[in-house]
Figure 1 (cartoon, rainbow, N blue to C red):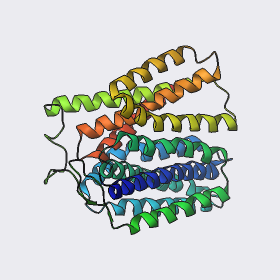
Figure 2: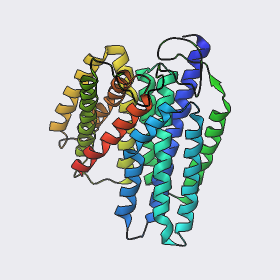
Figure 3: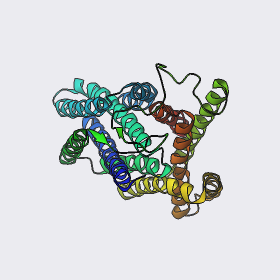
Figure 4: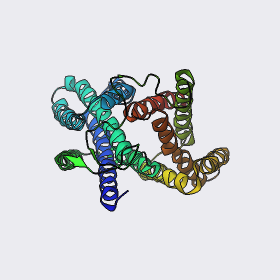
Length: 336
């Protein structure tokens, strides 16, 4: 990769990661402000999570199919802006609470698959870049939830709009495709998809059945990671400082996971992560440092599973990202 290509890829990854922090922070902050003191909080949050996570396989497939993917980012920003407006109106009329959740959920879904697809394509599925992109959302949720205020909400929204405009102004990004080192458009498909709307016959690892089974296994691993991550903090009284610390630890783990896998090799790094997580889980009630270490290690696995899914569904990185995002929900529900 040439220095200019590398700089463009690093810049895209950094901007996407910052947007991830801001988008997740805005959503949780907005939901809190819309529901604080209200009765129907559970329905609102369930609606948001269903739309934000369980729709990502569909929006991810859409991202793979579209040649002009900048429309997904533009649509996400528009929906988030409308969500903030609905949130403001909900202070006058509670009927705007549910529209707030719907707008934020769909906008969040569009952003995540756009970012996951763009980072994977423009970095050649670099596991370190994947880790950086997925890491920041956890801390955004912590900051947005703990420090929720109208001023913070509008800081989030303004920052998102500025970064999105700057990103959309870049007509092309010199970067490696997943097959080589040529420059590609920011909206260009990099797979040899032909006219296939779905990756039929293109799943790596042998037959479609075998490849599909591997994807399902990865999704089960992701669900297990979601369950374990929640179980680490079950029964702990969470004050504002601890919530921020948990968010920062999760972010650090996801970010470090890609670098560990790149430097040590995936299997050695994964062995360290899994064994360390098990040991920390057994001793999580002894010291908070043990619990935080375990939370760090379990989050280290996130870029590894995303890397595997992208490799198996090469050219369909949006779908891969969406499937793994959807798999988070069952694990979370089982833990809570």
